[in-house]
Image (cartoon, rainbow, N blue to C red):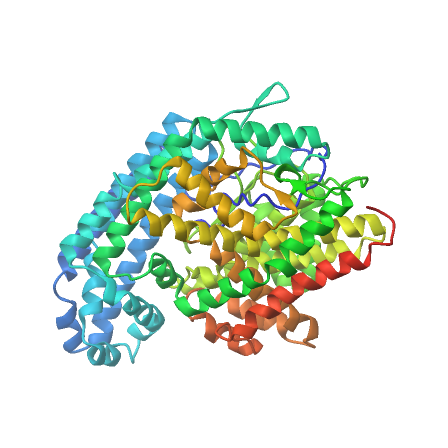
Length: 615
């Protein structure tokens, strides 16, 4: 799945930027030349044929192979064929998803995406039995088989998938769930995407899409921010019935799946896919919520003071600091800043990041219909990742570039693990991205001598971290409320808005005034639709990286090598095992306080600058 899909976080803001210059559009020909490519047609036919042959050759036979002679060789051959098929299916589906994200309003692309999704589902349904049968093999028998090559290569994957064993259904039910997703959750996801892409927001006499409208809430002029916020609220309100229906349907769909599989808590399925214990996430949530007074409440009180107000209206929350000219960046400048920061840490990391610019792996243009926000799509190990941005020249856009390139570097390094073990659980998926942001922030800060500009950078970083940690945990709290209440029946649009306002008020504090119109803002957040409970991974990643960065600052030598080894592991090792070489343990409640204390420290620096030039 793409990481940071629609990374719309209302993050730290700046004034209008100058034109960023010519922006790249990605070249997808490394996957396929076009949607009518003969190679694509051949691969679709091959995928269906390979899946059918695989099922014919191995369905109902795995337990016998595991107990027979040369078990490791025979099961190893089966896993190797399965992995190759997953790579082929992933290549086709990745291409369709990337084409579609380039313009979700184009009916031709929409049909192409839908048709490909249906064909890939049909092929993948044929091999659903494989994991189910592997998980039915007796533990001792499988352990013996994977103690020797070639099967031993996939030991981490085999041990990992066994964690799903208690929640798996019989083959026919799994096939039904899989096939019905096309007309179920996948269809509702597509409806959300196409509805969002079609929305227009009337600001300053212009009809804007979501991304530019959200961008205006970072404008230097309050009247522009107010008009943009009002327009967003009005348009979302007009379509709230549709968004409420989508949210209700997907929450019920998830409840049915969770109930059949035996998950006890509404977020347990996400915890399982993240390979993280529920108690660890609860410790993170408790630590963040307890820190509200020391973080968001404290910072927004300071920001309101800078603006000469008792409290800020919600459209001012991401406003640039008053009386300070914000920096703007061309695409070339943004590239140089990020590449310089990456190169200062590790030449190898910079070399990999450089490929994205040199080989057409980035789409940075802002276009009508294009998916909003940003993401890094790993595609498959036999190809390479692609990055989508909506670059508008702000410092925040530079940080987003650093973030997504971090994902891209991580995905390139992890590709050596193969299609089954390269994917990284969300507990570690944000590690490289947030670390890349931190490197870039520190590089910019080190080169800034003007006290007012330094304050701008510090404030932007604090707001970014608050949005990544506090705001995402508030999003998680909102989702929990929605999914728990949905068990008792449908939620009305008013119910959804009330739940949204309750968590927003608690997390942002009394220095942010949540006025009329803001109650609808839950409706545009794509994570709630595409990937329920994904959002806490941002907070997990940010706090984890803060702790890692603290180790880096104190390390003498060898940190970069250990860090890149962590990224290269992909999903082949659990998060606690990967953090051990750095002396970190996320299961220790004190771990989360380290990350939160770094944010507190930056707020303290801003408070200490009060007497200096600037606001």
